[in-house]
Image (cartoon, rainbow over all chains, first blue to last red):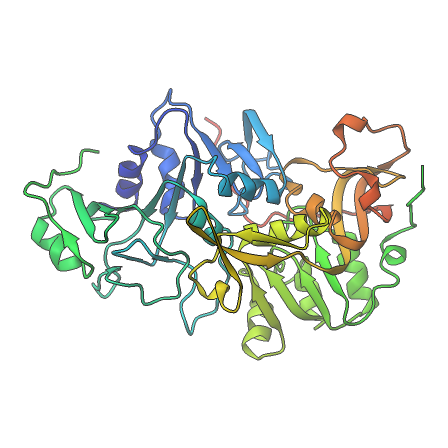
Length: 218
Length: 233
C-alpha cells in the first residue's frame, strides 16, 4: 500500500519530457518532487503563470508572486505571466498536456466529484470544473477508500459532480486504474504488497481484472 | 492625452452607491485594490454585489467589507479562509454565487470585448448548468454564460500613467486587466503614478481607454496568505 508520497511518485512516471502540466492542491503538488532531473517540464499555475519555480528562500518572498494555492513561489528562466482569462484559455484550448488533481469520488464512467459535500461549508470549485471539462489528459490522485473503509471508486458519484465522463486514469494507494470508454475501472497495476482480491473488495464500481496484474514499479 | 487622475481612493469611489455591482481585482490577497477597499469600508456603502475571485480573509481585503455587512452578494469561484463569511452565509445574511474560475474570468473578458455571452464546457452536467442553455459544437456540450454587467470595476496595478494606461507586476496581474476592461466605470489604483510618455507603449497591459479614474495608492500592506519558503543549503 502506498502513502501520499508513493501515489505522487507513481504519477510522476506518467509525466513526459516537454509536458506542460497543471498540478492541483494536495497529493498532486507532491508530484513535482519526483520529476527526474534533466526532464524539461513546465508547471502551470492557473492564477497566471507558466514556469512555476520552487518556494523562495526565506527573506526573498514576493507578495506579488504566488501560486494557485496562494503560496509564495518563484519564477524560472523562461517563465511567463498572464491574466486569468488567458490562463483558462490555454486550459480550454488544450495547450496543457497533463492535469493532475485530487478527488473525493470517481465513477466507473469517468465522472468526478471533488468540490462540495452537502451539509458542509462550501468553499467553491475554483478552477476545477474548467480543468476537468477541458483537459485532454487528466490523472486523479486519490484515496481508494475513505476513513470508514468505504470505496470512493463507485458505480456513480453520490456527491455533487465537478465534471462528467472526463477522467481516464486514477492512481490510489492500492492501484493504477484506467477508465474504459464503455465504462468500468480497468485494473492496470497493483501497489506493492496489495492483492487483487483486496482491490476487488475496495472497489464498489465495476472492476475489470485482466489475467495478470503487474505490481507497480516506483 | 486625457487626464484621468483623481486625488485618492475616497475621490475615486465617491459615487459608488448602495446596491451597486462592483468587480474587484485580485487572486486571494494578491493584487487586491487595498486603498479602494478601505475607502469603501469608511464610506459605509451597503447592499453591494461584489464580483471577485475570492472574498479576502477575516481582517483583510473584502473580509473588511463583510465585517461591516456591506456585501449583499458575492460572486466568486472560491471563498474559503474566512470565518465571518461562513457565518453570514450560514445565517442567510449573505448570498453567494459560486462559478468556475475560468467562467468568471471569461465573463469579464466578454464584457471588455463587447461580446454578450460565451460558451464554455466548464460545469456541463453539474449543478452549475442548472437552468442554462446547452449547445453542442463538434460533439461536445457547452454552457451559455453571459458577460458580466458591473457598475464599477476596481483594480490594482503596479504602474500607471495619467492617461490611465496600466502595467501589472508578476502574478498580481490575475483578474485585474480583464476586470479593468469590464466595468462601466473603471477605477485603477497604482503603486506608482507617472506622467504620460514615461511608460513604453509596447509594455502597456491595459490601454487607458478602459480606465476612467486613476490614483496613486498609499501604504500598501500586500499581506501574504501562505508564506512558504525553502531552506538555504
